[in-house]
Image (cartoon, rainbow, N blue to C red; front, side, top):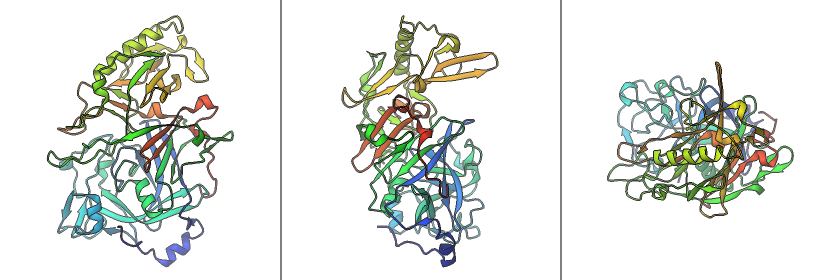
Length: 450
């Protein structure tokens, strides 16, 4: 059980009363903007009291949200006492008995510690000064009617400026959507228990128009021109991996990543000969399986899978149906074609379709050219490159914990509607929205207070 809602000063509540929603059941929405210089996806949340817009890196596989607290000011923040029920909810991390600095968000006696993770540029804790304390404070997102819905006791971690290395300009932390007790969707569901324990994302690759994240709704998902995408989803189970990156050798902790059961891959309708043992999660140390990521820009394949997949794609692309001849590739990609040789279609470049066959033969995630190919234009180079990269022989998530064999990256997710139903433990997916005459930039946002 979480403690009762923290008190917000009366004047603050009066000031924000015109746009803070009291209707707990309203679905929440926030634009997802792509930073094209880093290929990172960013949302804007509202933190502190008074509320302040804060840009956060969107991470599907993160356990908890963290924010740079250097210069953090709020009239409502509280530390998490080491022996509190909230500390028990967070699990065994660490406790600070006595802080030797001035009191503030980053310093408090008898305070629970959380250790932020930067998925873009891992942090050497020895080189970052200061400690990282768990905080409770105000957190808000927009509703589908344009108001803000506020959580007064949102749990997150304070971090230092050094944790921001590698993140897009203006980003002040990380928004955690992973499978944990304290991810954003789970905290909103706990606070507003009448809302479905479900969230959805739709990433846009547009330079000007955002995609969307939706919390507390299984639909409708209304996109222009009058399409409800909740009616266009196929479903596959979400699988748990008992060995997450925070596991200890004697105490495993479940992975916050979303795993799905990928059974096979087809290229142009033909099965790719894979070592299928790599597609399953190893129950002893956690390697193998397939995850979905918003912080990996392009799909990563374990090396043997990558080599076999690349050969299959090259063969089909060279067939009379496509008649494509590969040219010298550009890193990090292993297969590229002259852009002038590739025809364009409604579904993007005319290349072999990639089928991810999931838990049943009729549950197929189709990857068309718009998601499989990446345009490279620089100097005298104009290429379409296959947007899949080599993850190495033994991908790892920690020193002794093996990583997934396949990580489906952000480029492959763009213009696909994904619904994460945490109650039913299933993923709903649409495949490319281009086949339905829309895209992720066509979500019908409410314009009030956006």
